Image (cartoon, rainbow, N blue to C red; front, side, top):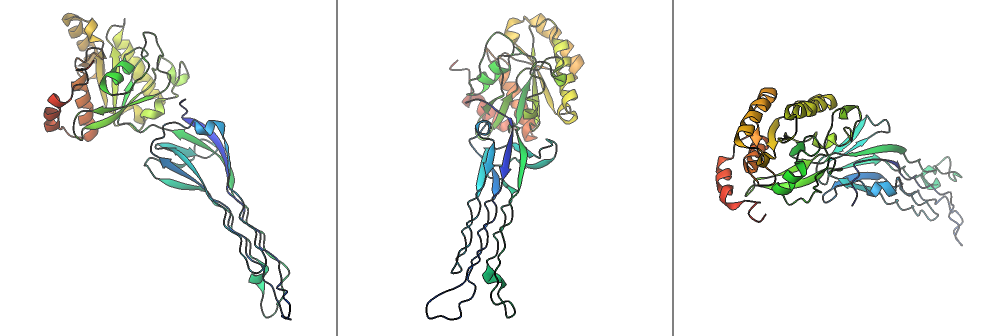
Length: 349
C-alpha cells in the first residue's frame, strides 16, 4: 500500500428536500384542505479517526464527496426521509485544515473521535404548516435549505512516542528493524527510506512504545533540498527524538550539527524536544576511535552519546530503555530488570 500523508478533497452536504403543496381531495369530503408534507433533511458530512489506517491513499483516487438531498415532501402529509450522512474515515493523527491550509478545523488525535464538517440543509415545510384561520388554503411551501460545500486539506501526522532522525545512511532503518518487528527497506545507499516507517518497541509487560523512522534529512532540507521537511511533521507529536549519527562517516560532528540546524529551522518546538544522541555502527570502530568520537559529540551536543550497533545489538537496549524512561517521565527500574531476561530481539538474529 502506498503512503500518502496529505491531500485536498471537496465535500458537500446534501440540500434539504422541498416541502409539498398538496390538497386533500377525497370523495364525500367537501372540505379537504392542505396536506403537503415536509421535505427531509439533507445528509451531513462527518470525518472520523479510525484504528487500523495509516495512510490517506484512499483519498487520492476519490476527491469529491457529496451527500444526497433529502426526499421531497408529498401529499397526505407524508414527510420526506432524511438523507444518509457521509462519514470519511481517516487514520488517527489526521489534521483537517481549511482551504488556506493554515486554519485548523480539527485534530483527530484519538480513535473514534469525529467531527461534523458540513451540515445538511433542513427540509422545507409543506403547505400544511401554513394553514390557519385566515389562510385556510395556502398554495405555497418552502424549498429545502442548501447544503454546505468547501475544499479542505487532510494532513496525517503519525502517532508515535519516539522519532528517529539522522542523515541518510545513519542506520535508522536497521535500528528500527532490530528493535521491533517492522520490516523497513535496508540497503547500502542513501535515501533507502522514502516514507516514514512505524515499529512497536516491546521491552516487557506494559513497557511498549511506538517509534517512527523518518526519511533522512540533508543539509538545506528546510529550504526544500532532498526530501525537504516533507515528513518532519510526523515527529511533531513525539515525546523524544533519537538522533542517530553514523560513527564511520568522515565528519560525525558536522552530521550532528546539520540535523540540529534543520530541526530548528523547521519548527522551534520540534527543535526543543528532548533528544537522545546515539553513535551508530560502533561495531566498525575500535576502542580508541570510540572514545575520541564520544568526546567530540559530547562537546557539541552537551550530553554523553550512546554507543550502539543496529547490526550486533550492542548498546541498543540501553538506548531503548532511556527512550522509554523519557516517554513515561520516570525510570521504570523494576520493569527494566524484569525485562532484561525476558526480552532480547537479537537472540534469533
